[in-house]
Length: 188
Image 1 (cartoon, rainbow, N blue to C red):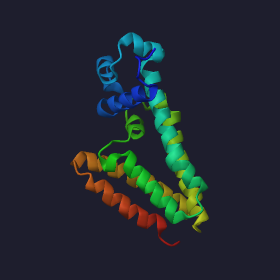
Image 2 (cartoon, helix red, strand yellow; image 1 turned 135 degrees about the vertical axis):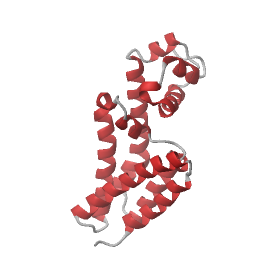
Image 3 (cartoon, rainbow, N blue to C red; image 1 turned 120 degrees about the vertical axis):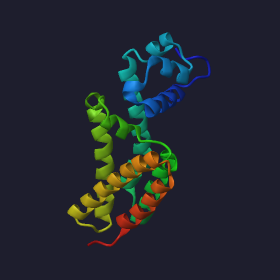
């Protein structure tokens, strides 16, 4: 049971930040209890499946945010220019202009990748499919749309890594600006 006034979403948010800072492997129970303010008993009451369940629920929360704010709007948009601008703004907001690492990408690179392979693959696959759908509606051929959508994900993820490695969030913002131009460029 949660302490009075503590919401499950707050716990998941705190867990996400622990996993971002320390990776799945490095997220010890001590770090988790410190970040959430919950004791071990409360944590295991909330997450009987332990750390794996915690990570799975954090990934599901991230996925739900992206579905609502990024994927669905891309699939449903009538105006590609507005949809791309909204995606870029949402990505910029979510990743704190490049100051926040992608937890899904971090899990994909770590040793826990196999445990969460379906969630990780589904996140990236749905993002790419939503972008391809939008780009096809904007007049691009299937192969052009697929290449640009893949380039978008590569750019976003690569820019997050480089911005973090270099301690320079402006790298991420520049990459998003250039990505917008490439996504909206006329068909080749």
